[in-house]
Image (tube, rainbow, N blue to C red):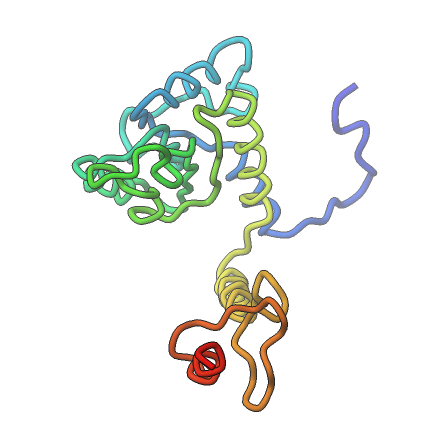
Length: 211
């Protein structure tokens, strides 16, 4: 019994966005771009134990023109940064990026002049994957989350409206701790709140402390 036996008879309705999202998420081809020890876990994900082929992603492209997913596996040096950007620019649209490991996401333990402190300074990142190094199961979970993002991605004018809505939501985002922001005029700061240098009230507090 196939899938057609489970479908209702007649016409099956859907949207162009859902059909395009399903086709895109089912044909993601990664580019071979391993930089450090995270690349070992990336190779293990393609092995028979974890079987990356079940997602149709076993074909690792040796050319960026036939890939739409860049998995940055490992730390990115300053010398490698322009190469990474060139490969990203040669990939056809739409394309996505997974930052695999803490070194690719934030520089990790390599907090020095030679390592880029986060690959998002070079290319836009869709999924950040923590760990040092992350296990293949974690990479598979990141791929599933990326598939869900691709499936629900808007198209055309809806896509532009979604981007604008997300940008406005970030601008309206509240501070992490309520009441920590600068107080309004004529309002005393809440107890335990710290005032930044140069804000109103600094001189009065300093005079009171001297007295």
